[in-house]
Length: 69
Length: 257
Image (tube, rainbow over all chains, first blue to last red; front, side, top):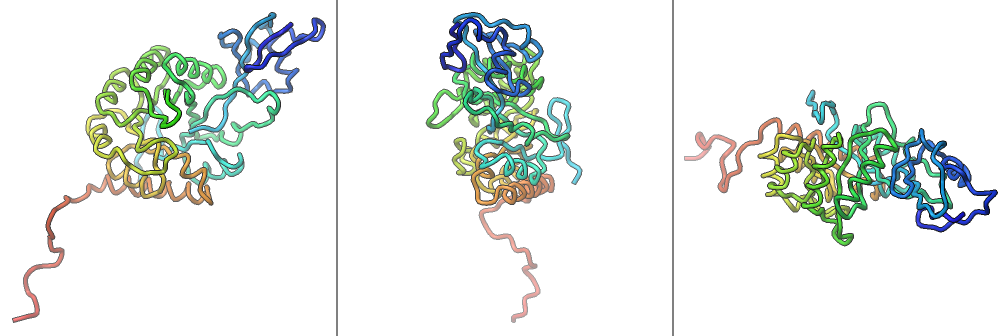
């Protein structure tokens, strides 16, 4: 499976591919509490991370707050 | 001085808004926010750094009395700004948004047409919208009519520390506005903030001037004092400006023949 995460292509073998947004976030070692996701342009709220499936070729954005004015 | 400002039904004692960009560390930022007494603090949204996702800056900002104000910085048009506002709401549950649409990264001046379009859409979506604008009185009225909670005219380009370069237009905006006017961007010194408050601005937003100085906490405190002094001076009702001298001492009874 190939997906694009934050502008970078990521490849997974079939048996190691994250099945959900939650699994992807865990795989990347990110604290899911501080993150919001977009899958193919659709916002996925935190409470739906676990039941949002990831499919081949999807574009995923993982976004969070940073310092800004 | 008991002088509260109300934005969208929320009372603010402090009229100093603080931005959180450019601080050398979360600790320095947190100390500066504390020292400022600010109750409105802006944040931005960016992609998580997948290689290093350890930085959690929100916990350094969050305080009981602080309203977090996500911005839409990086948006080049209305569509991108609306998208960022919705992402911010999904991430935090916060409906307040500092609307920024800046297509040109060199001067970072806001696009008035796209800002108005995004503001209308966000107000319809239930957001409390605080738009960052050039000091344009006509646009300010249109944004107010569209239901924005404030208007935030720039004093000078973002991060320039130049002080109030848009004075006459900001005065017109203040004279016409029935929502709070927050002077945003370009204020580089506490005296600039006092100046804006003496002109009748309801609040100021400061980031770079505090974040990049030698002692951010002390500068934050200096800005807080200036904002308070400027506000008090405005409320005290300044005397008239005159082209000629007007003697303060009596012009009679001189000790001469």
